[in-house]
Length: 417
Image (cartoon, rainbow, N blue to C red; front, side, top):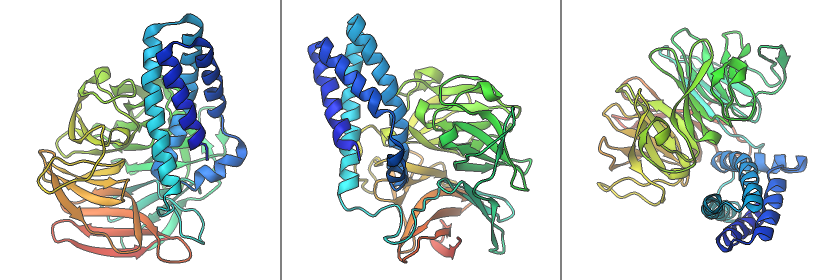
């Protein structure tokens, strides 16, 4: 992988920007631009990464290209403010490269069983009738389990997607949610769009379709690797636009606007004054707002319906949590309300489920079955939690659904696919 080279370039950015070495800065910019374009042979290797690392690396690629353009501008115009920004960004890229290098060489569990195919669950949704749906982004598929435990594909690999101009191949569903109208909504990460899925498995674009950042209607709007979504009480879709570090809204007729977020940073505030770092998941908080797993900031944030953002727990520095103390995280991956004003968080660093109290303190862990790697969670009912992940104890990886009663602590495990 390219982590060592990214680390080397990040150091070049930092040193050259600090020293004001224009020629060295321009050379680093050109090399960064080249790194932003992965050769075809590397995509399979990237696909075997843990989902958190995969998303961060893919989203950071687009960020590298943006950074390279700013670096070129810095080198040609000598703007001190931009040079200082590039120096700070070099530190961030260096930190990401160090984390990535550690995760890919430490012998940590891979995203699949030793001999089975790479398998990762992208998102999960639960219906009031007991239905559970989950996405497999690498396969381009969505599976459905009814209340009787019968499992069948809703969207099969190779399904064509309809947009404003016709049909096209390519579908990488991640976050899911069910609307009141019975339609399923999905974030199509690699194609930068939000889609709807009919009961017959047909897929249609609601908004987006190209890499970028722009509000607008339908296909004119732009997302950058959107990772999750949730349906609001008014029928609008709230989107964790991961690569753009924003929370976006999509109206039922496809009009996209930005609710909160602006640049890659950590800051509470209202609307564009708030900042996220690669938000991965979003869920209703039960009080009219939304919980956001702010992955790059190792935090859980709360976004009000008017765009006010505050930090519930965690912060830019990751770390372990202790009972009764403010909760800390390491790459939080998924989040769900606990029904008591707090939250349940799937921590990406060690794949544990952690409770957060309403005042942001660590409330203990929720146990999961052995040989099971949780990938996504969603609340169901007053005390129900649906966890979807991958079995890790057999030769062939399989998606599994785990149903948890958070009040009693009971759980049941179902091999799903």
